[in-house]
Amino acid sequence: GENVEQHPSTLSVQEGDSAVIKCTYSDSASNYFPWYKQELGKGPQLIIDIRSNVGEKKDQRIAVTLNKTAKHFSLHITETQPEDSAVYFCADRRDIILGNEKLTFGTGTRLTIIP
Amino acid sequence: DGGITQSPKYLFRKEGQNVTLSCEQNLNHDAMYWYRQDPGQGLRLIYYSQIVNDFQKGDIAEGYSVSREKKESFPLTVTSAQKNPTAFYLCASSSRGGGTEAFFGQGTRLTVV
Image (cartoon, rainbow over all chains, first blue to last red; front, side, top):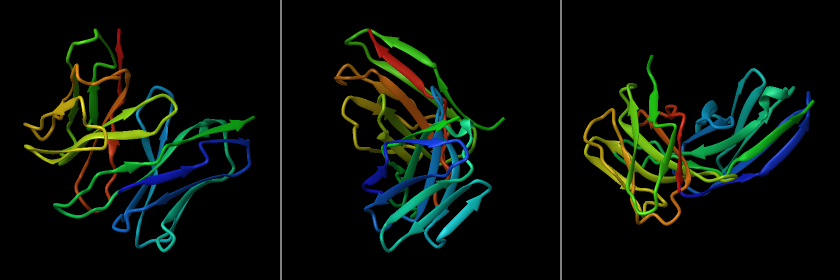
């Protein structure tokens, strides 16, 4: 992608409540949107991803929604737990064989779950 | 076990010296990436390679160099021309196309002393 904006930069949520992180992208050719979770001192790990032909995807307490028209996608975490505390990154990528496939990341959201 | 390995985990360098960070993957991935992460900031792309013997500059390539002589290896050299090299460096790899996951290494923390 070209540019990915992510909001908010920090988020504190009471344990058990929901958390929502939003991203917007500028590259209209982007068609793959992953979300990564990074714990302190470690590399990011994929938690969920979505392709452009799907509007919503859910995996237990985590869901991602995509609005291609508006060029934004969101991460939803329900029933938050202390182990959800981490930095979360959104990203986008255009998957074109022999084309420009670089993965562009947002600036990250530090999520803190308050016990 | 399949995965992506970065070494070393911590690296100290004197000003004016070049240093090479290692990244090896046994996932048979064609694409590999190097990112730089500064405290409280996102991941900025340094270089990426979609196939052996080919690589492209990312957003912050100045002061860095890479090579891709083998599919499984994508070393990054931080040269003396890089003005602020102290950072956390992350390597990633993925298959090409099809919306496949990018796997990250555990990172190398480089400190210039």
